[in-house]
Length: 175
Image (cartoon, rainbow, N blue to C red; front, top):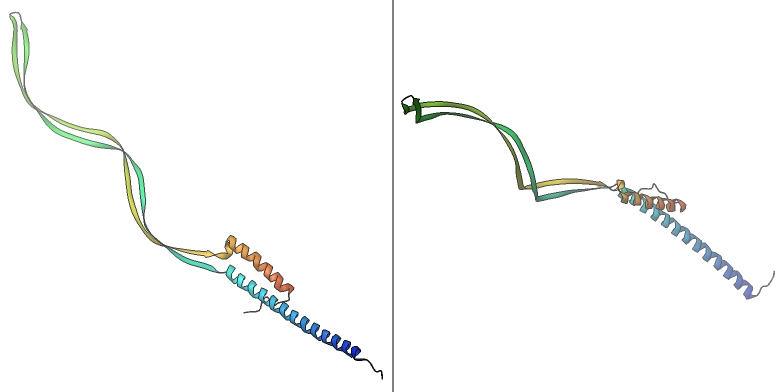
């Protein structure tokens, strides 16, 4: 057998140590890669769940709303008028005769019935100004996936799924 010097065996020892360290480093990097892939897959699932979520909120409104408007009112009103008008007067009529002019007094005592229906047009604008109290609850449901934010989340989810796929992570694994 060959007798080798101590530096030869030291060189083999360093080479084997280097090989062991490289194998440990590669194994560690593969584990980091797997964890990074699982992290990307988990983040993609979380973003998918966020995109599919619905924000439900009820807005309570309690305030007075000022209301101001003008209502035009155009119509014809028939006004019946029924009365009896008493007449009591003396009328003097000059009578011309060949002997001269003679005044004749004629007393008039009578009543005159009056029955009228008068059509009166009414054209009026009625201003109305008030405050109306409003109390109501308005339910709001906001689907994040149908908003612009949902589109941005979809882009992030696609990117994370791509990263997870490249790192060979299971995208469909349940958390």
